[in-house]
Amino acid sequence: MDLEFQDDVRLLKNPRFRHLLEARIIGQTAQNAMLYALFILVVNETGSSVQSTVLVIAFALPSIVLGIPAGAVADMVPRRLTLTGGYLLRAAIVFSLVFYSDSTLSIFLLAAAFSTVGQFFAPAEAAVVPVLVRRDQLPAANALMVLTLILGQIAGMVVLAPLLLKLIDARSVFVASTLLLLWAAYIMGWMASGFTRAEEAKAMDLGFTEAMREGFRILRSDRHAYLAIVYLVTSLSLLKVLVILLPKYTEDVLKISTEDTVYVAAPAAMGAALGLVMAPPVTRWLGAWRVVAFGFALFLLGLVGLVLVVYVRDFIQSNLDFGISFVEDEVGVSSVITVSMLLAVPLGLAFSLVSVAARVVMNEHARPEVQGRVFAVQMALGEFLSLLPLLLVGVVADVVGVRATLLASALSAIAAAGYLTFSRRFGPAGLSAMDAAPQPEWRQTP
Image (cartoon, rainbow, N blue to C red):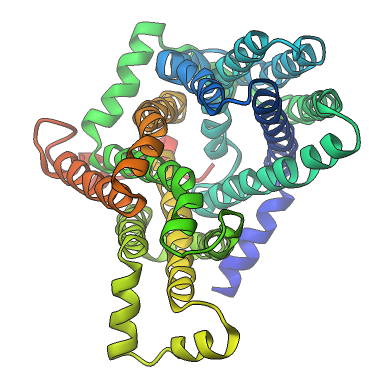
């Protein structure tokens, strides 16, 4: 295990992969800072939560409409052009917000344009990982990719944007984000310049229509890749539902202020960090597919546990001695809050395991030249399936309660995932021959 950990650390000595991580964390910081500023602008200018929902839709629609075709295009266009040009186009769009952020309509249109560029860029960024690292390094590489996403969210939404908004104004956030995106473009261009002619030429072998068919063929012929996307998309949709309902959950169930969502969010973040550390060795030990299935089951159990937190608390107090009553008596924190904090840790851990291991499954089971399409399908399905919950869960929770809404969401996800797993109508009927066959050349260690 020590040797494996040392090998994971040495992964950062790979200059091209390190440049990819550097560009990603800088780009994510810029993107999240911009998003935070846009939400603040829309709320302050309109005073309506409906307008915030429209902003969310503006980001989601391009993925639903263009996600899958954009994935095919991303596989066909040379990687250095897609990766570098994506950052440059995003920088230009964000810089336009400096001059057009006074108009809500302009904000919506530029947000949609920013998301449109991302439909071409994100699949190419995800698909380039197996080109840069060895196959046995994929678990650690994907864990680092997810980690940069989390760090970018913290740096952009928690540090950069709030600080500049407080000290200056929203335009300063857009200027800073533009400079960061240009910096990321420079780093990405430096990394992409190292691609060999063979690496660039692979994606040009298929035409657009054939490329689209090939991307879907992977999901129709390889059961593990198909189910990895099903479980990842379902987890992403449920996570968005939980994020939306978390403030109301803390108020209605935990009986504390909505500002105290940190009681659940902080343990979940700790669990997510632990999951990122555990994912590489556990994936190597059990196999990526088993980790996806285990993580998905644990995520569902954690969500149901939060819904039934009062009953879980009663069971623990009656049958187990975890010292919960001592915490309530001596520290002054409700036993329900304590149990919800305990449940949030495995919830965050499970989501990290699913996120990392699902990426590894798709890296392993799809040829490099079609992985852009596979990741694009995941992104498009995730946005499509989460759009309706984003629009409805808040209203439904006001009518039937937050616990009933979360429970209905979890049970619906269990039913849908179960049907898609065992139904012969969707996905491959059995394990693909790829699982038993010798590894083809593209799956060998580069």
